[in-house]
Every structure is written in C-alpha cells, then in structure tokens.
Length: 370
Image 1 (cartoon, helix red, strand yellow):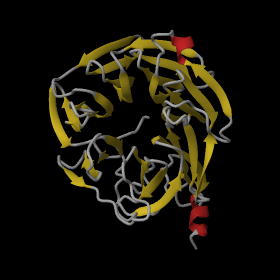
Image 2: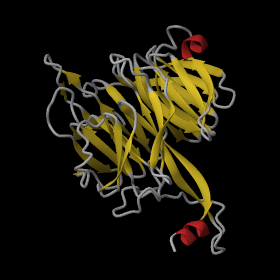
Image 3: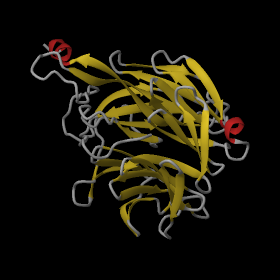
Image 4: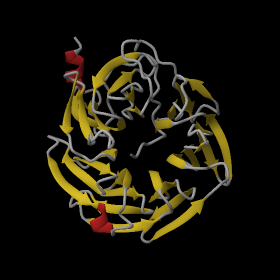
C-alpha cells in the first residue's frame, strides 16, 4: 500500500475519534461550503487458517454505524494484502495465485485475476503485496517478479523480475518518474525499479539486512523492516527497523515485527515468534532528528491485544493518527495518544488494512456537531 510520508504529521495527541479530513485544493475558503474528505471506514483483510480450513475474508468497519461486517468470505487461506484504488478494492491471495477485485461502493465481486495465467506459472506464483499508482496495480509474487495490471480493465501489462521471494513494496516519485522499492526477502536485497519509458532494476544488499519484509521511502531515505531469523528453537531474533541512506545502513529500532508509516511517523509493534513476552509499540518521527519513543496502549483492558497481527495508521491527516491493531479475530482502534477507542470483531488473523473515504461539506460537519 502506498503511503505518503512527508506533508502530514499524524500522531497528533488528543485528536477526535474516527473522524478525519484531507484538505482539498478546490476548497471554497470562507464560503462555508468547502468540501472535505473524511474517513468513512476501513477494510480489514483476514488471512484465515489453512490448517483449520478457514478461508481468508474481508471485513468492512463502518465508522458511522460503529459496526463491522464480512463483505467477502472466500478469499483463500493465504489472503495477504488489500488495497483500494480507482473505486475498486484489490486483494492478493497467495495460496489462490489470484487477485480478487471488488467494487469499493458495494463490495460486489467484479473479477478474479489469475496471476499464474497472466504472468506464467513460475512468475505469477504466490502474489503477496500490492501498491497502485495512476491506474496501474503492482503486485509482488514469490516467483520473483512484480506484475503490473491495469486497474480499470484488470488486464495484464507487464512483469519485471526483481529478485527472490519479494514481499513488501513502496512506490515513490523521483524526478517525476515513478520508482518502486521492493523487499526481496530471499536474496536478501532491496530492488529499485524505475518505471520510466523503459524499466530498469538495481539492487542493494548489506549484511545487516537478512530478510527484508516492508519498506517505505522518504526522499533519499529508505526505512526497512527486517524479519531477522529463527534460531534452532524457532524463536525469532534480530528483527529490527533499519535506515538505508546511500550505501550506509543504520539500525533505528531493535525488536520490530510489524510497522506502518504515514505523515512523518513510523509506528511499530514487536511480538517475536516463539517468545512469551508482552507486545510493545514505538513511534519513530522522521522529522524528529533521530530516536524513537514508546507508544503505550491504554484503556483496552477488556479487549487487550495479546499478539498483534497487523498495525496500521489512517493516512488521513485529520484522523488524528488513529491506529488500527489486529489480534486473533478482532481489531482495536486507538487514538494518536494510544488511548483505546473502539473494538471491532473481524475474521481470523487480520493481516492488512485499507481505508475508504467520502467527500462531505465542511458545513455539514459543523452543523452535526452543534
């Protein structure tokens, strides 16, 4: 999922719950009828369980109604990522070798794209992570490629070989040219793909980066979450958040097993495989001259997060840094201060989040608050 890192600071303390707006270039300032884009809800993808025979599912959190409901219930046991773009919702299902396409308006199933049929058996094997830009959908596959599809026609455009077992990807702009950064977890390396008139791929590797899983970019800086490794007892160790700047690599935060980024903030969680410690959370401020702070949660004693499976910041700048954290078969929403706000039941193993928005008149919000 593409998140813009600069331009908004999301972790505003004491912000309003579940309400947000993006500034609009066409605002009629002073007229009392300016338009705002508010967060109307969130989509939570649940991976399910192949062992238990529970398929992946997609839930919609309706913020206005305060309810959650399943909008798709048979997405394969390997559902892995969800994205909204151009009025459509895309779901990458690894075990199904497929991308499911739904309407963002009513969640009607529109299409099922077979990545192995479109990209070839090996290249299209195991779609993992998604991003989109300017009518094009990009998906990593465990076959070692990034597949490119048209978001309107859903037709296949091209495939680019990037490296072994690519996972997370991030799209940024460099000199008005879109650039993809791809975590190749099996090499390990970070592939940089220029999406100009002709595609070009370069690769960066470093001994500190053992299994990169997620990446975000801010200018010339790359922030990479690394899985680390499993020891002989299958306990995860050396997971961390790294900064890549030029050819240098710096460990920013030790013990990081999940992350998300928006505005100037990167929020992380830590719950290593095989350990029986309580999960912990932190915030790194990109514009804060280094360092990170703890992000303690409070007020959720009746619905505590035992093992976080996903963490996500609403990128809407007026959402006040609302953070969604998933665990087992529910998600909690926390304010930017870490205070618990709302619990929603969802399917098994929530693993990815996408947000839906609507445009309203600012005067309607003011009148509703009177």
